[in-house]
Image 1 (spheres, rainbow, N blue to C red):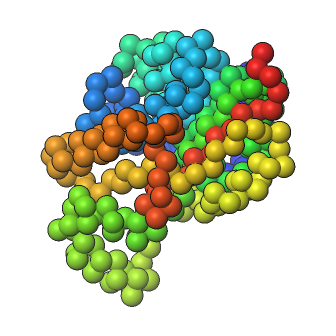
Image 2: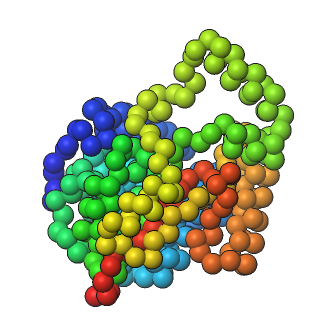
Amino acid sequence: MAEQMTRDSVGVGEHEQWNRIWTDLSDDELVQYRRGAPRTYRQLAQRVYFEDLWALLGQKRDARCLEIGAGRGTTSMYLTAEGCDVTMLDLAPQSFAQAERCFKSQNLPVPKFVAADAQHTGLPENSYDCIYSIGLLEHFDDPRPLLTETLRLLRPGGMAFHVVVPTIPESRMRLSYAFLAPWKLPPRGLKDSVNRMLGRNTKGSREKMTRTEHGVADYVKWLATLPATDVICIPYNPYHPANNNRTVERWWGVPLYRLHRCLKRFISRPPWARTADSVAMCVLVSFHKAGAAS
């Protein structure tokens, strides 16, 4: 098992911040896996990511999978429920304790845990059918070493699936507020204007971490230099968390998003959360390792 705990990969001390984040999460915030229909935006987003990954993977139930920057491991929970052999890798060891709680709460087998830097895992090459991350690549100033390590670990023909969550411009958020919470637009705009005038930081402690804004064109350029095929680099996830009122979210926002999702699945091919750049919450970076599948 790899045990190196490199500190400079995601910024000095940032894995200690993640340890605090995972420690402070309530049970309600922690478990985002759901067997039934999603009821909250976070549950919906996690289900969307899994469903697109699972479709692109060809629903390979015996796949050997590795989640890097795994955190609570929601995607890993879905893959474990489908019978996949899952390993979770993270630099913040507290995440493993929380992930174990999540898996046990849903009566799922607890996966293997590896404490390591995602750029230098120390794991054997050509080991995995699928490597994936949700909200990891944006925490690296230069994600190319991580992409290279992903390709090293994949078996020939194996698939990578990375959901990148950059900083979202306020203009995109206003579109979702107009749809799902129009009453919040004037107060929100006024509050942001006052904070800017006073020079206040409104991003919160998590935004003090490294959060790059590399876009689709950057990933396309970088992957062109690597042994990657079937490259997908697209604006991704149109489902914004526009309302923090659970009643409105459960009975209006999430059902509306689920209806949109069902229509997309009926008329298009995966990844179904592909969207226009003007409304995208994320960037999806997916590819296969060159070579025939073993």
